[in-house]
Length: 82
Image 1: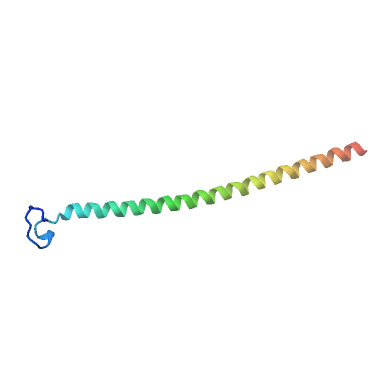
Image 2: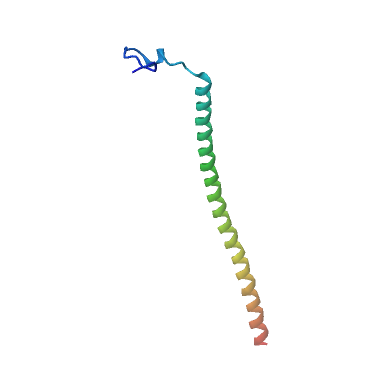
């Protein structure tokens, strides 16, 4: 069937007009959607990298705290032995 309701054969594009503006808008929407999904993917990678970095920083902080506590305990034990 064609857009006019006739039963003649042929291409539907003969009867339907091509709207270039709508096609351009749809193409831009598809491009924007792809860019948005790529941005979300990259943000996910950045978030994962920041999580790993945060774990490493906390490991360093706990390591320094453990070292200082060990030094303090050693000082207390040496003072008690005198």
